[in-house]
Image (spheres, rainbow, N blue to C red):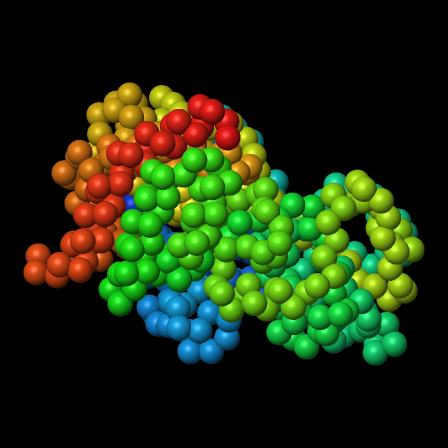
Length: 469
């Protein structure tokens, strides 16, 4: 068995593992060993479909030390006028550059791809079968907590009969390879999350007729308006004004439904079908152009989840829907974030990065690394890095925002941490606030609205959460 020594063993080279390692490298003199099953850094981005893209601006993603993208706005398409969204191939190439241009050249990082972590500091090469024992001087970092699932590696939870043409979204750009007589005439999108929305936009943008598309939607979702999460100074009123409106909605809402309706009225939340009240929120972020595109799909099946697909059609919770021959079913049921209970992030000789600001896993991992580097004990570190639950039901949105706000308050009391957040590339809005001129009364009024609504917002969120409404 091979042996090596390191200060930190990081299991996983996805966005979380790399963002943690990047900040730790910058803030300490530690040696870092990274182990991952994939052949390249980037985690699930290696398995993503070709037309996937970030759904929040590139400025908020990646690692702190290396910008992602060129900070430009899209001139055409459904994201026109808003800051760029890196495509899947761009993100994959970026993470490869992080490894080759930032981490490995430091001389303090070793990287072991195609390796299966066995626990106890041991990993085995998938190619040679050789085992390696890592002697960890400080801590092991489990960067796999989120358990991200993508369609290409996901097993459907419904029965699929022989002969049914069921594919992940990855297969769609290769449909040109099929003989014309075998190409699908009808498409069924199975699933209602962001992947399904991406597929709908791609199909329509690639020339599919709206009437050829059926969409199985077990639950409708509230969606964030991307206009209100833009990093540029020119979007101050949309971003910071949106945060002020959000805080005011938190403070004034009389029920959960009333809260989302207030957020919709403020333009912060959107829904595809205005006649249906959504029961789901997963932080999916869309532009108004994407929403208008998806509204062209009118054959929406709201009969619960798919139980089985056979040669005649779909069996769902609430009945059957027949489909004609040459129907292509597209499996979009993989979950980007698997529901699981949170745990303390700092656990003695183990660190388990989780969200400390939703929905930003990269920023969260970078902040956790900064706290690891500069604070003395687990109690102090966990107090600064309380986990933020990712919402799967609407009620959980209340708890998510309370945790976000509580963490933000704690960070604001620590001058060194506040300074790091303000300078962190992944934060997004700290520099915008810091750049506000003391003579700009209009912008100062927006910031004043946020401060004035913060305490009433927290109090009312706690009230709504306690009532379970």
